[in-house]
Length: 251
Image 1 (cartoon, rainbow, N blue to C red):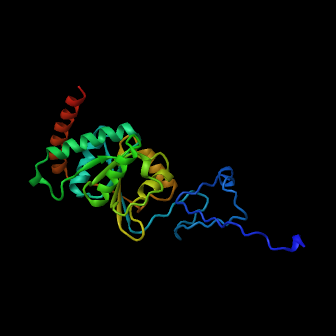
Image 2: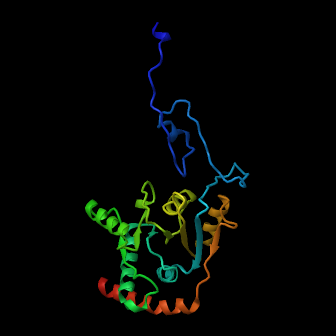
Image 3: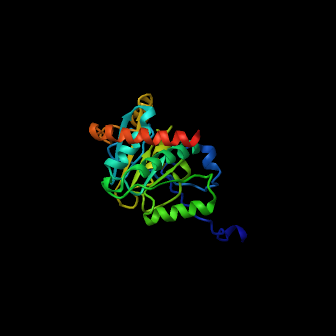
């Protein structure tokens, strides 16, 4: 009679991921029973053999080709020209995030208040080196609009939903497409619009274009930023002055 009894109820597991792994060993750890895999992709992407990623139609993507040693200047240019507020800038390491935050904040402090096209930029470093209470304080100020730009590593690239993120900046080019997807996925969520910018050094262009092309996300998806040369040269002077201040601090 026990064999005819109804089986005990099972827990139903629903797993949603922008970049779900296809590694059988990793999926086996979830201990799923008769799993059903559902993939959502653009109708126009017919090549199912290649790894493809689907992005919201409300996301606008850009890239800028610039010298590697001038990336901070180009970040300053984006903040000024695009008047970015509520943005997150991703770097490849905690050290890079720390130094970049110092440079951008030093530059922002040196600009007269009446020279800003919009609200003055306030930058904060957001890293795992900070105590949990400090990270919570910074995030609270960011949500309130008191901080315009968070500079961080991939600490918040996964699993954190912040409504106020209007733009994502890839200061360092992602090493793989899933990393790019998780980063830009912080904006343009739940039907809202958002922008993503990637600063590509001259030596990184081949890798970036190859990564985007293999994922069928290059043609017509990413627009090239054509800077205003007059504004870029004006900001270059302020940028060099900020570098001198940082050099004096470290010396």
